[in-house]
Length: 111
Image (cartoon, rainbow, N blue to C red; front, side, top):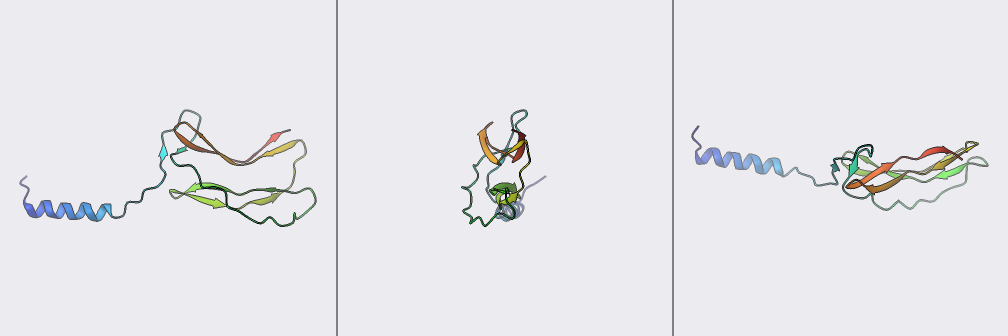
């Protein structure tokens, strides 16, 4: 196959156009076994919110957190939750390890 200067020029233009759409974000990295997906950049600081009055006595506020969606961190607002007798709530948090950051979703554990 013979490459002419026109073919090389066209290939260069096609490559340049393709690269103009590149977006650089935190990338998932290969996780350690049992760690889950790991992201190369830490999440932003939590958003500051004003917490209103609980809807019922005993309810507690679960703060918002960042999730990873569409190649970026997205804030999910907090909410009121009813207590569960015999359990305690462990909030969502991000843990550094395994070559990056990975999410630990909020969950109930026996008290």
